Length: 65
Image (cartoon, rainbow, N blue to C red; front, top):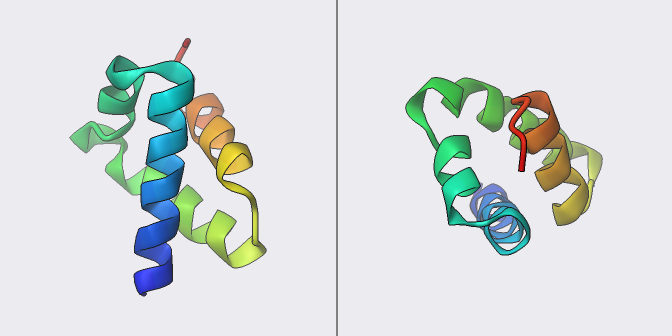
């Protein structure tokens, strides 16, 4: 479980560094929580990298950076 928390933290860090704090706030928005958690769990299980997962989250939520 701790590995998933570390993975999520590193993905959120990637999103913030790449796209900015405003987009990270949109990703962490309550209405996106279920989708983001599902993507994080799936990506962690498949062994995806932080950048691939971060870009996938932004694309799946259809947020324009």
